[in-house]
Length: 264
Ligand code: NAP
Image (cartoon, rainbow, N blue to C red; front, side):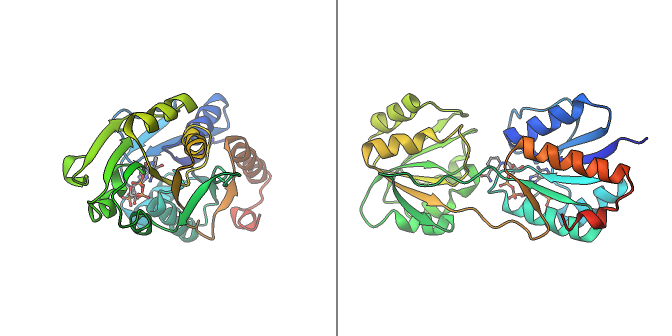
C-alpha cells in the first residue's frame, strides 16, 4: 500500500517532533516545508522543501500534484499568512487540515500585562514617556517601533535584523531559546529594562521572561494571536497531532473518505 503523503508546514519544535516520528514508520511519506527565512534551520530526516508555494493556489497545486492525504500546519502561532493559505488550500482541495497550536500563555497573579491585538497597538501601548524596552517580537515585526523612536530598545531575535528595520536607539542581541530564568533576570538587569513586548507564542522555551518580569513588577505588552482558519482542526502538541494523523490514516485505510473526516 502507498505511504500516505503528509505535508508538514514547519518552523517549530512541534513540527520537528511530528516529522521525526512519522519518519520512523513505513506508513507515511512526510514532507517538511520551511519558509527559508532562518539562516541555520534545524531539519528533520524527511523530504524537506524550502521557500514559499506561491500563495494558496500554489499550495493547493502542490497538494494535488503530490496526492497529499493530510496537511499539518505546525507553523508558529503568528505565521498568520501561511496559516490562512493553508485554510484556503484545504478548502479548495478537500485535504484535511490540522493546526498544531501550543496553548497560549495566561497571566498569573502579580503579572502586569497590557493585552493588545497587533504590533501597531503594542507600539502605541509603550506610551509617551521614554522607556527602556525589551522587544522579543521577531525580526519581521519591528516596523511599528520605528514609528515610536523616543524609546530605547533592546531587540532579541534568532538572527540579527537588518539595520534599516531597526528603531534608532537600539541594541541587538542575536540568541535562540530556550532561555533560563537566570538568563532573563540578567538580561533585564544588565539593560535596565522597564517594559517588554512579546507575542503570545506560548510554550516553555521562552516563558521565563514572563516570570522575570513578574518578579520585578515590570509591565508586559502581550500581543494576542491571530485567529485560525475555520477549516482547521486543532491539536495542542505533537502527541495530539500524531494521534489525529494516525486516526486519519486508519480511516483512509478502511475507505472512509477525506470528506467524511472534514467533519471530525
Ligand atoms: P507568514 O508571514 O505567515 O508567511 C509569509 C509567507 O512565507 C507565506 O505566505 C509563504 O509563502 C511563506 N511561508 C511561511 N511559512 C512557510 C512554510 N512553513 N513553508 C513554506 N512557505 C512558508 O510567516 P512568517 O511569520 O514570515 O514565518 C515564516 C516561518 O517562520 C514560518 O514557517 C513560521 O513557522 C516560522 N516562525 C515564525 C515566527 C513568527 O513570529 N511569525 C516565529 C518563529 C518561527 P507563499 O505564500 O509563497 O507560500
